[in-house]
Image (cartoon, rainbow, N blue to C red; front, side):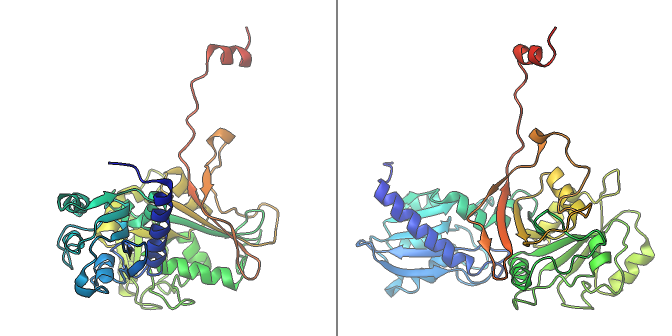
Length: 393
């Protein structure tokens, strides 16, 4: 297969970027389905149709775009889509046969379908004589559907979120944390909640802040609420419980030995209590819970826990994305940091991140940074010369 020219590659990236723009407008509304956009371009290079998947059970993006053309036909055209067209029967018929039947000459795909049994769209198209190009803006396409891809590996995708001062503090020395950031940053957090299937906090945050964990500021879909609560200390009148606020599910993850009476009282308030495996220190083993969360329809989780929860996520390599809101103020002193734990002794062991996109200064002056954790550095084995330099004979 011949490689596309630089000009063709530029056009392909332009149209896949438009697919992502269409798709991301519905992030949070299609779960458990991925967000998908589609663009169809005729032989002259003109866009003749666009489509988008708007909700689970609704038309997929490719079918939505083709429906805007006479007879769902696009002979000789190029169809762009950020995710491989499906080739299986679910709530809707498969897309790959409809795409092939439309007469398109070429299909350009951002990312392949990661779920076993869902794929096969690429080969189905090729068997019908359609030219297929893959991997255009793949990283951005995977990022757009991080939860969908990660769920195929048996756990949700976790996004760590923190609001902090310039010196990295999430509260003052007296424990005051409302409000470090301004109203625009808080509304943006509610947007993030609406885009995730669930929001997760630790028991300390539930006790200290009594949060709602809704997305009421943006009038979106309220996420499932998850609390890491090994001993079931969440109060029965906590605002996050379904009978107190939104009807969204509240899942309390506790240890096997948590009090049965507390479970009964919390279930009475609408909570679901999941008894889970724990580490030796009593912390919930989130790795073991991952498959259960996926089976419960939770593919993406916004982690709003305190510094200890964030430290746990980083230590166990469970962080997939990072969103930081930094207020232009500082408090100093021994106040808590957004990343707690025991701390690392050596800089080569530091958790590393790559920033994604440009920093954004929100109205009100708060800074939003988005990043992705990088793999840990693997130090090369020291040479004999290195050893002599450190400890000469």
